[in-house]
Image (tube, rainbow, N blue to C red; front, side, top):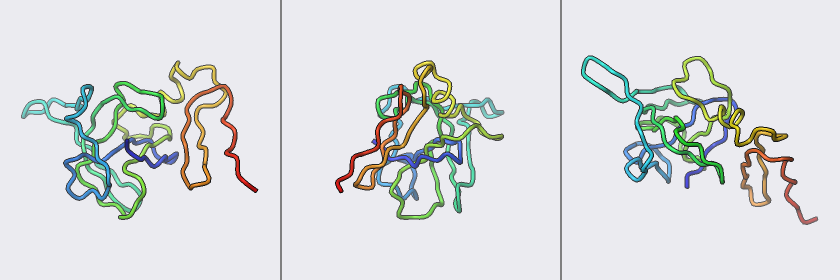
Length: 159
């Protein structure tokens, strides 16, 4: 289980690879342990090659490759979801998250099918009154829920 920063200002979904030597994250994605992992490839004059991706994120930079796998958010699974597997990063240290789950709309230059598409358009949540919600708890955690008939109730707090 990886911790993702839920970011409505970006559309990229990315997580650090176990091969990332300078990633400061505690948890890493292990592609070799997945039965559904598939790298995106492009045809080049040297044959089929992985699709490289690099972009600025906040004050830093992320470099990796475009891939696909089944991604789960809570109980919801999104098969063949594109994301970026990070091989190199230059980001602030001491983050409480491992990767970024961009919930924003696709922006020009995005190479992948973004997670917002199945969240907003997937028939699995069609007909619901909300798409997703973030529910804070007393212990400074936040839970993500996708789809449903009504937003979950706010957490109860002792007075």
